[in-house]
Image 1 (cartoon, rainbow, N blue to C red):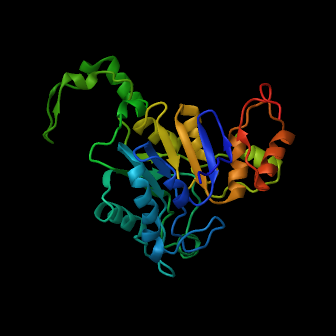
Image 2: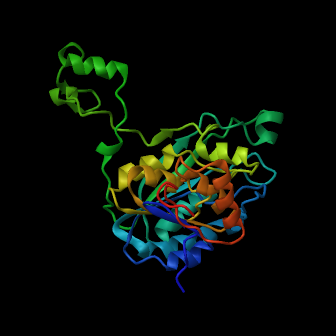
Image 3: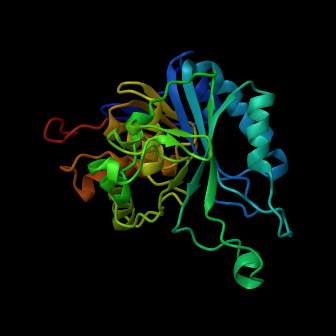
Length: 325
């Protein structure tokens, strides 16, 4: 039996259920990118569910094993994992690095590149070691593993160029005033082409993205309806970076731990086909706020939310000017 989407948009669809079952329904060699942030192996249990550190690698490995044949040959699997401490000790867990090794050495993935997401707005934690005893610094960097099915996944860094620094802008205006073409002591050969304007700078694998959204459409609607939003959302700029970098328009992107469906919103903006899988029906219900056209009133949004909570499927979301339900 093929699962029915809880709701659909112009480009994508959201499904409520166990990802292991929903992944099976994807066609083999059909997915260009899986990008997801699974529940981390934290010591404190979260309301959305998270696995013990000792069981985490094999648990996540089940999803990675199942999704691999669904990826296109040039497809990618990007996983955001937050760090953690060992229970009762001021020393770090290695679970996120064990995931990396397990995926590559046991499941046959390739590590295309490691990324680090620096969230400058993250609160100091853990309280015991950082706030109370003051023996550790604030943990504000997540590891983001870019896995690939083959050694040459599709990617194009020119689609994610960063703005030039002020100094580089000045150099581009008059390269001769800033440097001369020659071999540097490091052995690097710097030619005059270094002063060519390529439209932006090649980005680093350290992604500085603040996770401090406070007034977006999703949070605004949750607040109006007195609904608790998903507590562990990643900022939309994170999936946007990898969607731009690793896919083209109309490619299929999947988030197997969809949460409030930030990935889906990013894909909708970028013109990518997408699917989000989420086990918790309440999170599925409030994720619809991301996609409602502007002509939906708060009352209309509430009607749809409650229909989903009751177990109904909505169908395609379109402007009410075109579809009165």
